[in-house]
Image (cartoon, rainbow, N blue to C red; front, side, top):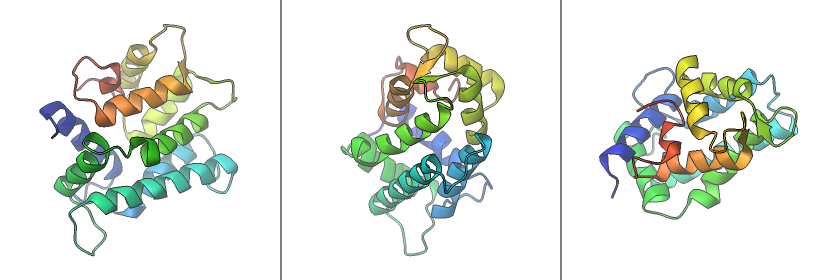
Length: 181
């Protein structure tokens, strides 16, 4: 059972995917988010990193659809999205199966020079794809940089995603992945 904080975060996640504000999401909407990330980093969807990201988002979509209480149209409402995310990732144990690989693919893409560190500038590019403003992105980066070294490791970013999409404790730093709630 999800708490109010988790519901609020899932609703924001739905809005990240529903870029055209239609009130429903489809596979193409999630892949569109992936495409916005790729475009931000100037990465081709046919490159190794680009293909990894698109493939992981496709797997993520399949998991969401599997747990959504939806009809055959392929569209998912906010309520159906909440149900699917709660069932698969909050109450279920599916994060490592499908969500972690997608988060790792995003983090690897962010790490443009493959040094294991994601800079504020790289993080801001990612946040722009999700529709997060610069002020919120900076605040988020500072909150997530747990060792205060001026960068995020891939593990720190993946942990933040885990906390954001599954965590119910209001003290978790990952709650602020996309800025203050």
